[in-house]
Image (cartoon, one colour):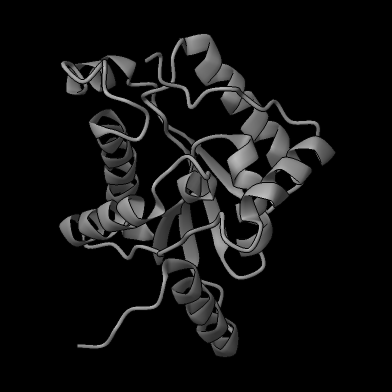
Length: 195
């Protein structure tokens, strides 16, 4: 059995193949927020025809959900070729699915439910795209290995193709901070979940 490359190296290998082919595949990119999307868009925009999908049922309150979406729209002023899909705010569904997990620590079972919800919805919509991915792996607070595992699992369920990533590698997270300041974007101080 061939040993797999780490996700960020697997991504670079795929990008090299894409560049050699001369074709620009379509990518449905789940975005958790504008700051996380900055460095990811900078890295991927020249290689993919990207549609950003803002879908975050865990974000609470609704005003915060709207504020983050407004920041996404502000960011996309710098990337006019990127299309945007606004997902529905399904906070009640999120709360129902994490019922009993309210006291879980950051990174625990509640986060697993959150990742699964976001990636499932993205994979479901990705049937008309060559790939789907998420900006979640740019955060040093998020488990990229777990996120990639869920993405691959949901890709199999929906017959879509998941783009492996660990966008925090090679200073991705630091670059997201720099770009957020450069673009004067709203940077939240919590993941979005009220817990």
